[in-house]
Image (tube, rainbow, N blue to C red):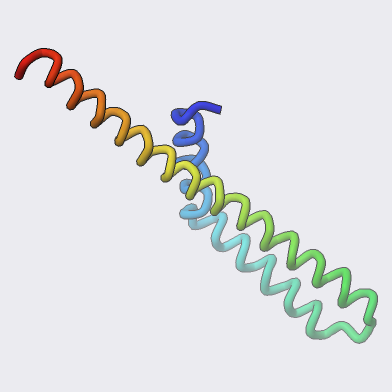
Length: 94
């Protein structure tokens, strides 16, 4: 995957993470799972709910990782562009 693609994926992940509807939905799902886990008296059910909570967290972590990778890719692109500009300036004699 190219740096440009990483930047775009990171930008899109950032949009999701900063989307009010996503944040509200995530919080509601998490709250409901915690409530179910807390109220459950069955060990197997609690373990299943705990797995769901971990998967929900993993989904968010994937988005956050994609966002961070995109920011790093954007930094790398800026550094490359800056280097190319400096080299171009020196070659043109300015």
